[in-house]
Image 1: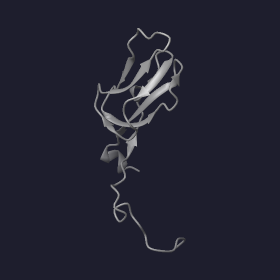
Image 2: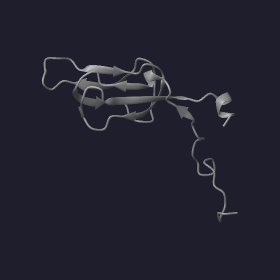
Image 3: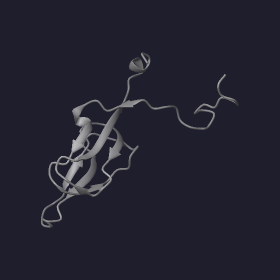
Image 4: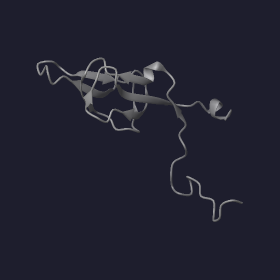
Length: 108
């Protein structure tokens, strides 16, 4: 073989099995409807439910205005969220992914 040593699997390392996910729907990508400061409420890798608040878009120039709450359009796992707080209209705020069906994985 090309590699020396013993084969190590995720299981032998005490890790959970690989989780196959996909983010194919337009609802999986949530964009800023306007400019502001984004505050993430959920960490990457966390499973979320439909309607769950994922973040808040604050409007520093309008302190009298309530923040816009970004909610999950569907259940899934949060795979990305905006890093910089300062956000322009159209910036990606969060990306959700969903488990790939076992029958689809079998075609790989």
